Image (cartoon, rainbow, N blue to C red; front, side, top):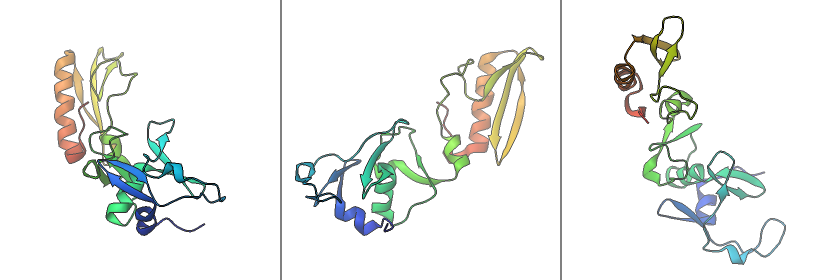
Length: 168
């Protein structure tokens, strides 16, 4: 199987307003007529909420195809700056490390404090603030007041996560 290239993506798709649209293919790899797809939005949602598209029998995430189309290479990890998995505007995509991508995540659904990086510590009977940075957990402190813990967590994320910070 041939490696996907920038030219191949440009041959198969048009990019408009953060989305890919099919072009130029009238038959698929098995010779079946696919002309009805020309000009249609490419892809469907996967189980993780990302748009994906099949090319020559292999699934690709649309945001990775768009990045390749514009930049000519694929980084190991791509980050959606606004954390919206279906917002594939090129301005919303940036290369990242796994750690940076994790920094830009939203508050987990099972979070009980309502604040990222704040959890209840039973033994100490206080809210604990801890932030992951540089492959280490930074223990920031313990607080009786939840709102204060939330503010301290926000300051810690600003300090450690820099441009990949996400307070959501």
